[in-house]
Length: 205
Image (cartoon, rainbow, N blue to C red; front, top):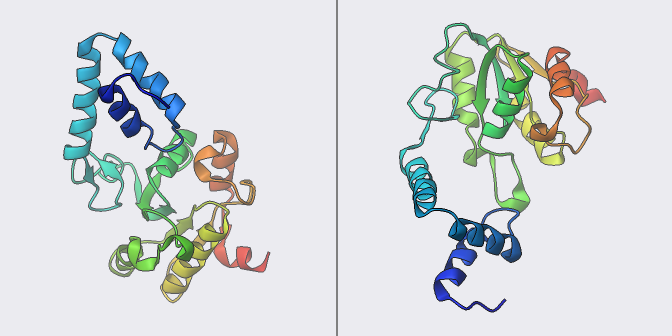
């Protein structure tokens, strides 16, 4: 791709590093910004800069937050005895959109994947175990995607928690094997949360 401007080329190269954005799409986006008032581009740049510099991680659930304790964890109407274990913030948003879950979350920050060099120590599993050990948690819901990495992560956490006095469940398989939680429709995902089953049952299937 030949560029008439080094500034244009640099902008396209940076935008094309985003997931799912190729050089042609990046060029279209950059040229779109060029047509907009300068203020709009400045607002976008400022929003991204502020997001990167000021964003926090909830000290309780590891969700992305503006403050130390996210809105979900600080909500007195949520049930702290039920914790839903998810991969990242996209899964929290997907489950919240169903309006069927009233407990708290625990965001792992990924899934165990030896191929990608992600092991248990790279995730927030240790703090989850500490939470079950030190707090009055009655149920842990595994809500990871039905992939090999998701199942491996579920089983690893199950082994860490099976000796504690806590109910370990998993969302019902309304979610097809191989599907990511964030892409499930709200009705299917909501029913999967409501109709969750003991995790041990999933080991037998």
